[in-house]
Image (tube, rainbow, N blue to C red; front, side):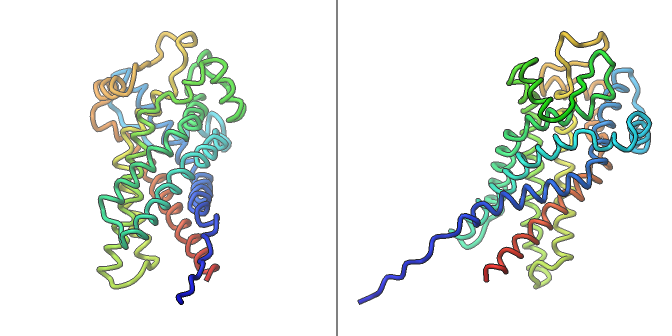
Length: 312
């Protein structure tokens, strides 16, 4: 008579871990790289203003950084950090957790994960994370853009939670998803360039070098993923910034730049600034996105391996 052995059910930690590790990694990386993100958004705003004035001059990184330092000092580079961290808790926790969970599920079922399945997992994770993270993203952009606005248009939010409550009260809850279309498309583009290529490049390098996930392999894969993520997502990030920083009609000055939606924003931006200015701020964006991608992916690998080894 064959004895049936009851296998222990998987620990809840196995399901929670990808989400917690992803969110924690995102928060650490964001805290370290917040000054670069602030400068990137300032470059996009300056470029928009110059475009309206008919100027095609490029916006330099140091010019934007000096402007921030002059206006707000060192603290200006960390304006909106609480919103940025809330965004990571909502956005990165979701997208990293969903991607890793679905990836491991397919791998356990089929024995491998095809390139097409990696892409699908990345796009779905990016979509869900962006939808959940959009409210924090709106607040983050507004807090970072506030010093560049005329006094009548400034919102002067005190904290991320003060901003959320005021937006709901003054503009309605739907405003928390203002600019959600470019945010979602950007999030999907980020994941398409980050998560799927990281795993694909890492696996191909392992096969080519006949090694298993060495530090150099992970670094090359993460750096490549960071570049692709930046290239795919920057035009949508640019549009997202412009749409989310718009003030309500009752508070607009006569020279306020407005858009009716994503398509209108793209068309007006290209007409005023030129097609290639959709990638304005590429170097500071990559300087932020590249290390952010590398930190998140490498920290995720480290914590996952540590957890796996501790259970053995």
